[in-house]
Length: 254
Image (cartoon, rainbow, N blue to C red):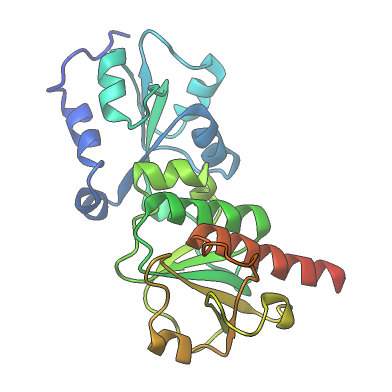
């Protein structure tokens, strides 16, 4: 197979457009780069719509064969693959996936989740996805103004957990799991709440926190206790600790 060597190639141009959020939304597609991350997709039975591999540094033939079950595989000049990706050390494989193939919330993931309010750092959002995948099953809910978890940095920070964790968009729901607002300095420690029933942790951005009206809408307000004089935890750290505490309580209860 002759490698693609032109930046003007139509398939490459279409894939590069997915680096922008507006184009991901319009097309319903996103990029995932690196063997470990695309392996996560395959392990969940999610196949790519299209794959680009580096001509000079191709991944394992077995991986290419499995990716080819989903859509065409294009061999591309290494420099052009580097431009398509976002890593300092370019990935050997970059895939295009369909947003519609990602998991949706179901009974298995409905009783534990995290709602992020205007968290704009994609690394934080992606890390929360990773935590939900590791400590779940759990879902993630994102308010307007949150960073896109399907951006290059978000997918990378999730280490492929975007293929396992249901991600929803919308404001804090009025019905459903009990809402626990995580607020630095709150009197009630996180472990002072019974987290065995259905629970969603509500987390704001590190600098701004949660608006008063969001906190007032929650059934519980709690803090992750910290050492005296310590800076506040960022959103990803707070959400991870909260998910762990919920899992700990549920495991202790059998």
